Image 1 (tube, rainbow, N blue to C red):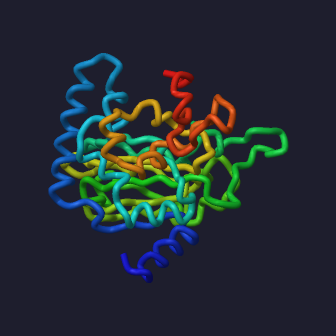
Image 2 (image 1 turned 45 degrees about the vertical axis):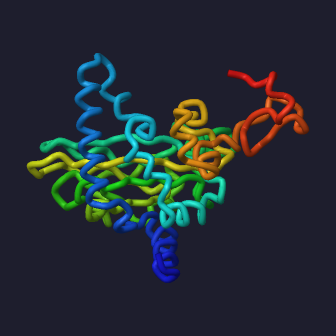
Length: 271
């Protein structure tokens, strides 16, 4: 990504609350991701109550899904807003079938705490002064006006209300993008899936990110498979929050980069 393109994407997020990063995944990677999502969805349907869980923690379920935190251009944008130690908060699959109705407009982050009132002093308002989290939607299919692509209210990340205004909402737009692209948006931006009026499934991967010190949607440091973490290298310690784990020993006994006891104190490691 050239410098001017990077600055343009940053400005779009600052003004509208979202941007589209093109050509992050190849056509072959999108084909593989689609096949894997279909496989996981079929397996989940065979297990009572597992239809949602089967599409969670994708990085553990196929090598192609490990790409979501290996993309230099994407990480550059995420870390501009969230810091070099930004943490992946989840990895989910989304398949919207033909005829699927539009989802309700919402903002993200209610599970992690920063997008809900935490004290009386908050007066029922959400934090809008700065970016605490970003969501990334990888377009495994083309996102079009008719197939269930994500719609946004540009600039809505600045509203401190937890509820979007009642419809019809002026300025609502559907974000169109070619497959392999990624929508990157402020958690606070009002958004939702539009109606799929097409004849084919719409595929996507959802991967929220947060600041290092915020509670994640899932504690990925305890979920990630060891071989997946090893393939992620040094970068994986940041991505999966290993370096964000709170110490349960004295500071001089704790190695923050590895998220565990220093050599010599391994016998105190938990789990």
